[in-house]
Length: 220
Length: 299
Image (cartoon, rainbow over all chains, first blue to last red; front, side, top):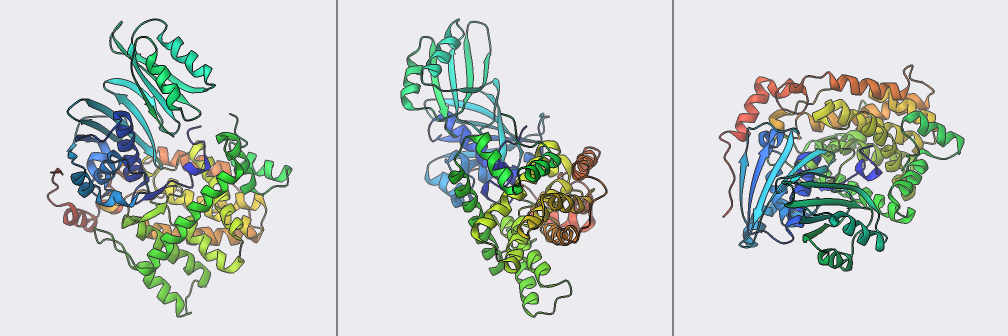
């Protein structure tokens, strides 16, 4: 079942006009910011399919910038997010693409600052629900409905067991987990959707584990 | 986690067997599926109800969208209604005007609660606040109205679709109207089976409705389709309360909606390439609004 909660049907509370093109877009932007871990200094947003065709009318662009500024779907500041972005010193650019993508409502967000750069692909699947399909070239599937932990690590044996053991110690249940790598023995990514929010203590312990490069959490 | 119901038949059977309201089954399922407390769930739905009230209030004062395509019709309808000379009746026109109010606020980038989507957000609150004046429900009964509507929407979303891009307007306003109709029945004291009949009768009359928004905006014809969705819901509820039943069971009507959506050409599924969007006036409006589209850039 794709829809699990009554609030997927009666909700979300949001700024109009479209649950998929506005609320979903804001959520995609906000997850990107969460994954980046801080306010980016610049953003390049590539829009595909229906997003590319109708983004202006649905304020998809304004909503994505709102998300990058950490606004929720119902935050009134979404409407003036372009001005707010300028105040926050974030430059942005929208690039409608003609290339083929699997889902009609797709956005690729590339954000960064002087220290780092990140690329993320998200899709808006209806009623404000979204999925994250790619991170820095890693294919993944992240619903954004549950708290999640993303672990960038060396592709070595024992990494996954260590992380799972640590979560077990804190009685954190794993709802969905995916592991991917670009090249054998190099960088790999674990995506772990869990049932409850994860404390800083757990995050710190995960970061201390051997061969772990970076740990990020996405709150519910 | 196993859901308490997967289709309307299971939902109605469980409500009848346990002598509970459909809203109660939905609340119990939410507790089960999300591990949240009843109080927490009721508070969240109460908040959603408040958002709906505020949106209607705002729309009845008069709002206009950036494109200028929609706005102000809720004000016209309420003024006409207040003269007391309506042909279709006070309650029906009240529901229609409040549905329009909500969608005009949505088109103007106001705050709304998606039910089940933003484009179809007017039907459930429009009917609720009109029926409220006749039935004088408690706050809790109004919150329950949303759970009953949600229970039917939950079945449609999981067994068919609530997305215009996937199934046309029948999946959005059609679903919203069916949900409203079923919820009216519970508030009016009807049985769970009558809710199912009302949903089926409503949805049967929304089958085939395409999604053809002019310029791709959630405005024309979306706002007026919410108006008619609300009217459809109220009339179907009265029919079910009178004892009229649907010859085709509710779940099969939902299945038919899904099948019809699957066979709908893409031009009629939220691409703004067919139907009203492709009329000479629809095209002219599109070029007027978006003539010379440019890539936005900050700083």
